[in-house]
Amino acid sequence: GALAARRAWDAFVFALRYHRRQYRASGEPYVTHPLEVASMLAKAEADLPSIMTGLLHDTVEDTGATLELVTERFGPEVSALVDGVTKLSRLELAREMQPGEQPALQASPADTAGGQEPSRSEKQAANLRKLVLAMSQDIRVLVVKLTDRTHNMRTLRYVGSHSSRRLKAEETMGIFAPLALRIGMYTVAAELETLALAE
Image (cartoon, rainbow, N blue to C red; front, top):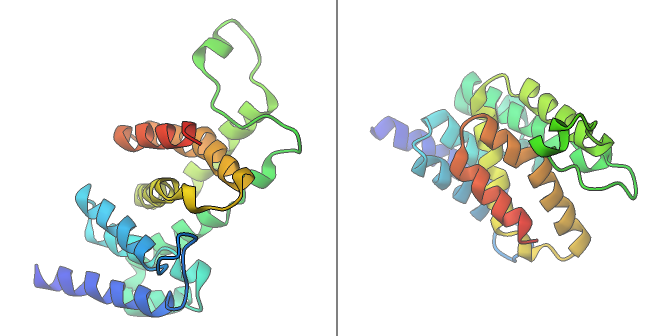
């Protein structure tokens, strides 16, 4: 209704204000990213707090906005979701890989069915997926994070460094696509895999 539209609009204006003068690698204003994430969540029929979190998810991490301010403006439910997404974003998954190590891709059933031990990178990917799940006490945190990753992968071509793009693709294949599958986001999982493999 009108109240929901007003709350979503307020979240958009907040994001617009705090992301002003920030730009994406594509040259577009940064606010286009949270707006697209929120739009994707709305199309997936997510609830209003999730859509608002899509708009606000980078404000605490990337701007001068504080979690306390988000709580004051949008309430504890939205604030808790934003906090959860921020904590997931701060997980530096790629740093866990050792130099020269193979990508942390998900172990396939064929690899383990014959009694073959999963590789170190496969174990690492599994542990990181468990950590992400544990940090996502509210499943909506993970839904927003996976939507955020999907949009970032759609625009990965604008990231200048091939090694950075490759690292994001490896993270996506090893961590995020399997998590999307695990929580039943099959279309998102398929798109993440396709985008990662294209890199």
